[in-house]
Figure 1: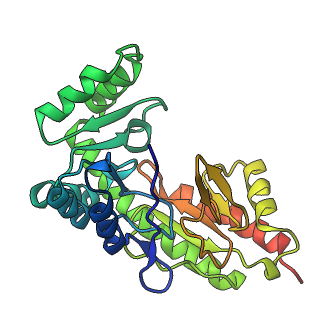
Figure 2: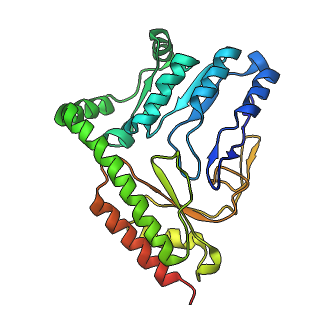
Figure 3: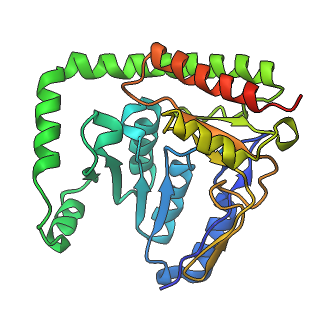
Length: 279
């Protein structure tokens, strides 16, 4: 079994998106040897959601399974609509989403969904059945407490808070001589550049200092490391592309976040960047 990575392509100034032309070439080349095609909707900036509709159409044409990693996607109506369209126009076998990222429950569970009963039964039959029932109970209790109106209210608030986070990061970027990467298709994550020449410490040190200040959701990517997984070497590991040109930190505007949370977050980041800024 061999993993084949389809590199992302530049889409606009900063955004990275699916290279479906290369994917089609690979499907043509490997044919029935392709076990499955895996795509992603929610992801860290500067990556955009994969073009799941186009990929689904290719998977239908070449009769190959298609699995979607929809980690944060349940809370983003546009992503869910894309998955639904993909299933209608092409092939989607399964899509998987996290319970804690979407429903504010403890870490440890996921929802495996599909559009046919046969697909779900197939997963059930190969699962050993020794997992804890706690995630199911947590979700059941949470949904009963929230109700439909509570859930829809959370989704509406999340969209507003995400926009507020973007505005506040753009103000911070202007103060610090940085910029927010332009990723218009990513509706969950934002990225703020960290130009090394602007600071007295490396980007990784800034990430460490934020963690010590209880800022645990920010992810700093310096683009300077590589990692080999199996036979695949990933240059600029963590940055989605070997063409990463500038270090950056990512921020997520997920369900449950409030405007007050944004103010505290951006305030701590701003203070640290000002302290580390080269005079």
